[in-house]
Image 1 (cartoon, one colour):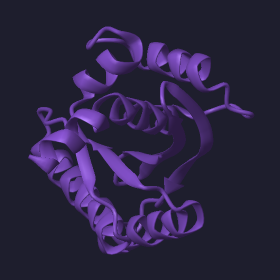
Image 2 (tube, helix red, strand yellow):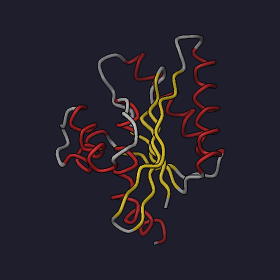
Image 3 (cartoon, one colour):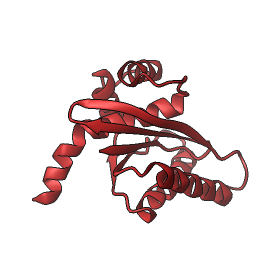
Image 4 (cartoon, helix red, strand yellow):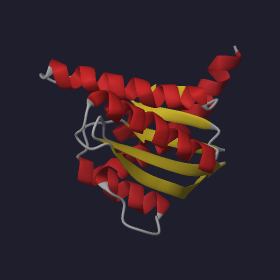
Length: 162
């Protein structure tokens, strides 16, 4: 099974794709979609278009995205929610179901500790996947989302069938 992981952002969005066969995971692709700081509607369009192109190129079977973390800045949280919506729409437009995961659940699945630091997540992603090139922080987070989904997808698929 090929899984797409997405770490949403309105300026930088991490994307990671892994292959899963039994208990084995393999790095396929990672990238960061950079939208710049232009008009917000144009940035949302970039997210939708570029993620759609990645999906068409790599043909994932399923997708996962990190939930929005609500901080003290409500305006930022709303923009992040809209960016996340554009990314979910890109997945849906390309026939993918999307499973959401909290940042805590992702860290727990990859590092074993729900309050792990970003550098710990990146380190574990590199240890588990051995990517052929350096992995930017946002892409490492997206690969971590995909790994988390690999751990939870079998249970979710069973729940969908009942």
